[in-house]
Amino acid sequence: MRLWACGLLTCALFAQTISFDAAAIKPSDAPPGSSGINTNNGSLRAYNVTLRRCISGAYEIPENQIIGGPKWISENRYDITARGPGHTEDMLKTLLADRFRLVTHPQTETRSGYVLTVAKGGIKATVTAPDTGPTTNSSRSRIEAKGCPMSRLVQKLAAALGQPVVDETQDMRSFDFVLQWIPDEVMSKASAGSDAANGPSLFTAVQEQLGLKLEARKVPVDVLVIDRAELPSEN
Image 1 (cartoon, rainbow, N blue to C red):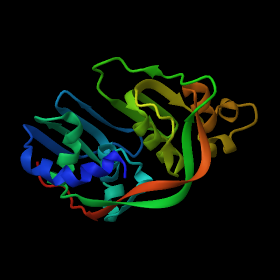
Image 2 (image 1 turned 180 degrees about the vertical axis):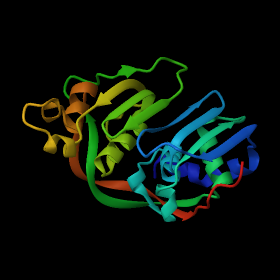
Image 3 (image 1 turned 45 degrees about the vertical axis):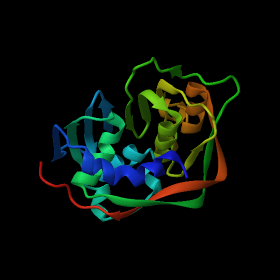
Image 4 (image 1 turned 60 degrees about the vertical axis):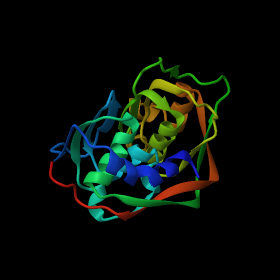
C-alpha cells in the first residue's frame, strides 16, 4: 500500500493533537471550474473546492479513486483558510478529520488505466528550486504547478482522463511546469484548420511539454473508501 494509506492511520491522531490558530470554511460563490489548494509555512488556502477535491489533495489520490460518501461531497464547494503549528502537509488531513468528521479506509482494485513513464529524451519540466512550497492550479485543459512531485501529477492526469494513472518514472524530484492541451470533446467539435482542431491532445502535450509518456494498461489501484463525512462544523 502506498504512503498516502499510512496517513489514514494517523489522521485521527493529528485531529486530537493539533489545534489551529485560525480556520474558516465558507461556501464558495464561484461557479464550478478552476480550483486550487495551496499550503506553505504553516498556512492553508483552498478555493472553490469540494470535499472530494480536498480528500484528493490531502491524500494525493485522484478523485475517481475515492469511493462512497454522501452526494454533497462532490457538489458543495468551499473556500477554506487555516493557520496552525506543525507540518503544513498534515494540515488538510487534520482539518478534514476535525471539521468534516471524515473517516476512511483504503483498499486495492485492478482497473483499466495508464502508466506514466519517461519518454525518449528525458523529462523536460524544470526541477523545483529548494525551499519552494507546492502550488498546483488546474482547469479542464491546463495544469500550472510549482513544487509538483510525480505523485501529484498522476493525480491531476487521472482527473483529466477519468481513469487511474500509476507513476512508473521512479523520479522522486518535484517540478515546475505549465501543461496545456485541447480536451477531446473540444477537439472533436472544432472546425477543420482551427487552433482547437490542431492543438495537442493530453497524451501529446504530456510527451511534448513534459517529456513523459502515458501508456494504457491494467493497473493495481489504491482506492479510498469514505466511511463517514459530515457537513462542516461552524467556524
